Image 1 (cartoon, rainbow over the protein chains, first blue to last red):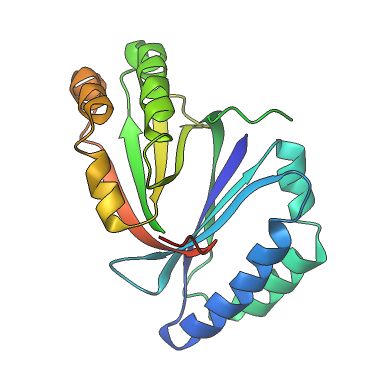
Image 2 (cartoon, each protein chain N blue to C red):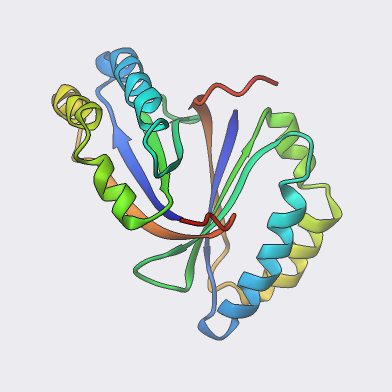
Length: 100
Length: 100
């Protein structure tokens, strides 16, 4: 399992729209064949801070996500709603063991 | 869904033992009734950096985890293997919508 944790900071007045557009991205992403998880989280301390927890069977599957129309639509729609560039950190998923 | 992302930094010589003890914690934690995810990740950049991605249906379920024997065993076993205190950050899980 190949995991990316993406940290996103959203302008306060765009938070609700961001949630809605991101929900659509979630619903499409979980249908990708290599997807294992595509969780969207909102900080308990600061509602303008979001995390995307994106787990794919392989690095190749994660890369394929970035070529999907729903990802590109999300990326372009929310680009101006962030207070700073989003940051993705990558991990090897040890457990559970997801076979490709 | 109530999510805690826990960041752990492990002494280099303890990494393999940490993985094994954490695997046992994972296997027991996913059997807890309120557990949704208990993923254990290792940084692609630095193998001494780990993330525990712990999702429970409710805050109450997450709190119950900390009273389990497997959590307490893990906590006490790995306490001296960390280079600094671990840090947990909490989130509301927006999507997927997990009903309690």
